[in-house]
Length: 207
Ligand code: TYD
Image (cartoon, rainbow, N blue to C red; front, side):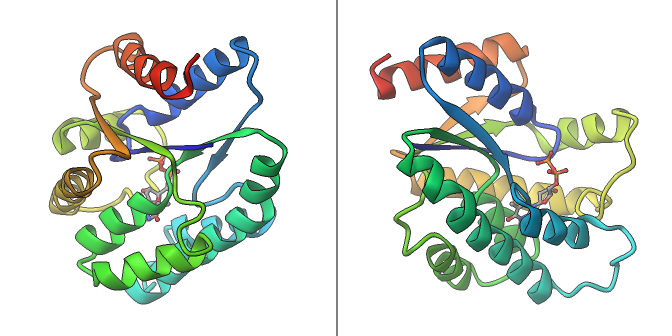
């Protein structure tokens, strides 16, 4: 089973993933968290290129293909073997981030992105079974990343309008995939958000 977490930077998905891993492990499951871009040595190198603030002249086309390349490697090198071993894979971002950031944010062709996402995931065989969209207002999200005391990476050092477009994107993706994607209000406390994640996972996995 593949469960992905999606949302704007600063929405709190990384905290939720760790909570879910601990919860599933307490229920006797084997679980692995992988992040995108990254999750293996080749994809981590691609991540460095993508997030390096010095790469200001990166074209949108290059950016899109690098995210897809990172995904193609992650699926084949990590995800498939993990699933074969019966391990639940939790993904910190996956296919929907490309549609939201490159499709809606960078205004690139979403049909092309769909095809590339299929290409990276063995024709969709490795699409997530379940996706949580942690819904946080773009203003709060930008505020959180600006006040967390870390330097902003290339994808975060952007204008508010970029975040607004991505946010609209995530909402539209969710509306198009209501069975796969569960939207959860990310503005309440991490424990409250996790209660909802837990409820959904408990039902779907018959825990
Ligand atoms: P990261 O620091 O991991 O952000 P976060 O902790 O919020 O997930 O950086 C990943 C960045 O890459 C993030 O800004 C979202 C962006 N991204 C895309 O633009 N397209 C993609 O396909 C993926 C996976 C991520």
